[in-house]
Amino acid sequence: MATTLVAAPSWGPEAIASDWENREVSTGTTVTVMQFAEGVVLGTDCRSTTGSYITYRVSDMLTPICSAADTQAVADGVNYQLGFRSIELNEPLLVYMAANLFKEMYLMTEIIIAGWNPQEGGSMIVQQSFATGGSGSSYIFGCVSATQKEGMTKEECLQFTASALTLEMEQDGSSGGVIHLAAIEESRVEWQVLLGDQSPKFTNATLPPL
Image (cartoon, rainbow, N blue to C red; front, side):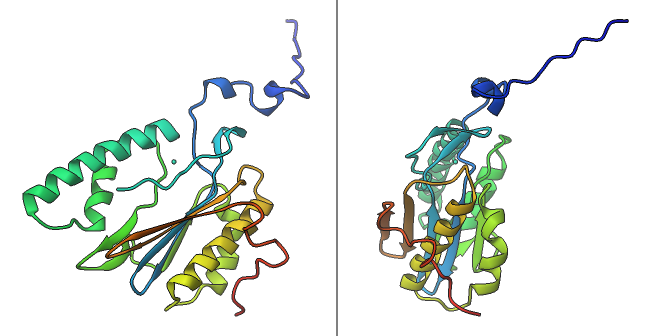
């Protein structure tokens, strides 16, 4: 029986992933969230990927309530359900209620859910002071776990999150671009975008000492 050897392409899109055109778009780079006394701080970079191919460099992955189309569709559905239930209950809903609604939708999405409510203040579905996800998170998880501390102020959380994202963007080839930040409190949501020249530099992006 004859054997045929097929050489894999050494350059071009096929060398990245032969079926990248057929893969779904994913915002699977890096997402982080930190708690402070009055709320939570969320941060992301801005790259969307399809496999290892970067499809969009200026995505905003912070959505009020990223395979981007699937995640947005899920977020829209959950947002509708939350609005309906808040009318029924006549009060703000808890973060875990939003998380449970996301869990009911069986789509392959990776989402960090955080926010503020009167009963718990700033919170996540898992009660912890810091969480991170996406491909870049593995580069910074150990450093962040060792240097993050309880009781940080909003300003400290914003700086810490920006520094952590800067560090992971230096290491993860799928992450990069600008940094999106959001500080969620009872009375407002503060949005920030840090451009490349405004982000902490690698040599200066030092996390608080141990």
